[in-house]
Image 1 (cartoon, rainbow, N blue to C red):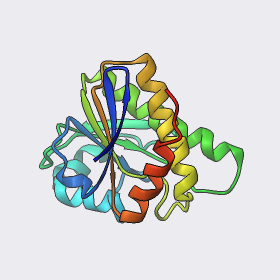
Image 2: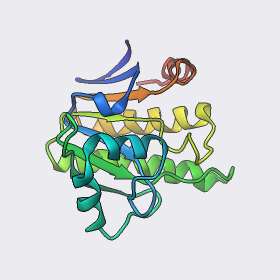
Image 3: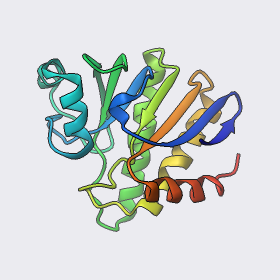
Image 4: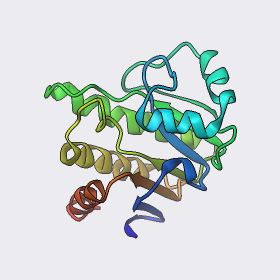
Length: 177
């Protein structure tokens, strides 16, 4: 397992299935309607069962760069934090919105006494964000949050492919504390 210590917290990289994480919260790479969709979001909704969608429907959606929270239902995680990443356009706004996804998700985690949280590579799938750029924005956002908020003990990036893990690993080596 690859990791970086930030004060008393850890950022970890693993290859795996985010729906199988035993953690306080997992972060769903959601769409604005919070509907099941495909990719990671579809897998999370399927594993959580119909209760997740029933709860999510009661929320008035979620804007890009924002986050909202539901219970985990049939998942091992107590909570699902839903965040809507930007569709990649190459604009400087993309990195601001992606950073906001992580900051808002972590803020919600802190307010719900979450000690361990697992993220996927937000926006890198059908939203088209290049993995190397997303890794840099994501890891630096998490580092910056943990420097100010030591209550979160473990932030784990659960990545689907070996290639994504390799890219995040290379980026993690360049993140300074």
